[in-house]
Amino acid sequence: MSVARVTVIHRRLLQVRADDGSEAVARPARRELSIVCGDFVRCELDTRHGELNVVAVEPRTSALYRSNARGGSELIAANLSLLLVVIAPVPEPDFFVVDRYLCAARCGGLAAAVVLNKSELPVDAETERQLADLSAAGYRCLRVSAQQQTALDQLSAVLPRQTAMLVGQSGVGKSSLLRQLVPASDAPIGELLRDDEGRHTTTATRLYQVPGGGEIIDSPGVRDFAPAIDRLERSDLGFLEIEALAPQCRFADCRHMREPECAVRAAVGTTFSARRYESYRRLRRLYERLSAERTAAGERRRR
Ligand SMILES: Nc1nc2c(ncn2[C@@H]2O[C@H](COP(=O)(O)OP(=O)(O)OP(=O)(O)O)[C@@H](O)[C@H]2O)c(=O)[nH]1
Ligand SMILES: [Mg+2]
Ligand SMILES: [Zn+2]
Picture (tube, rainbow, N blue to C red):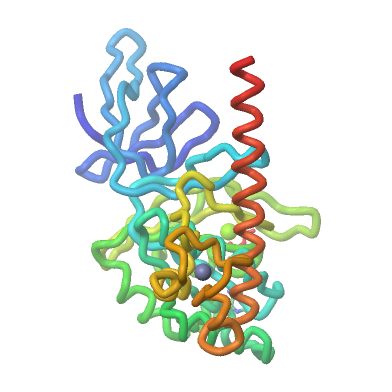
């Protein structure tokens, strides 16, 4: 029995990498095993069929989860240490999605950074303002260009000893960055599909080894993202500004919505960006709606 790393999953077929770097195809031995990219799995050779079977998943050191539409948690990837939230001047960034990834990272025990790719293109004033607010809040922001190969050393400098994951909207250049960081990384045919306009788009979450050390995961582009609600820190939902301000609120269980003497609301427009606060309010409402739906679904099941 040996432990291997899951690099990619195609339906019920996994690709796993052994310590010596060799890759093999494996199959979960049981249906109930929930396995994602980045998992360490115990494998056994089924000598009858000559197949590798995954018999168990090792405990995860960290994980990235999202909420599905019913408020359930879905695991996206495991054993990560750094989330790289990629944006670009085009397509137009959705900073509410950026915030939610940053919250999921914070609450999942991962470091996070915002990466502005295509930085050789003009960056509009609104994007500049949002990046300045995120920097002021304590998030690391990098500016790179995969195409011009600008400042990629800043990105590769953070990768050794990390398992980083590239996330963000489709078309921001995640796979282009990956190809710069891992030159031998041609994603296998089938994982790159042409979309309606003939563009390549990534369809599988896959882990690669970075030549200079560390690992990096490329993932399909998203339109939206909601962190798993049961993983969010109740008081601040993962917002760094609120984490810092909340101890000064009058009530220990302040939700920073309508409560009196709320230090968070008092800081809005000065040290706490109004857009970030609006982002918090939207996530808070989503959190409460999904929590209520889950409670109702639980009660229906009990009846
Ligand atoms: N101008 C410019 N274009 C870039 C840069 N990096 C990537 N692109 C282009 O942006 C487009 C999308 O790049 P991808 O790397 O496929 O984007 P992605 O984020 O992987 O997209 P999905 O796989 O659909 O999520 C391609 O046409 C790239 O050539 C850059 O630094 N500057
Ligand atoms: Mg891609
Ligand atoms: Zn408060």
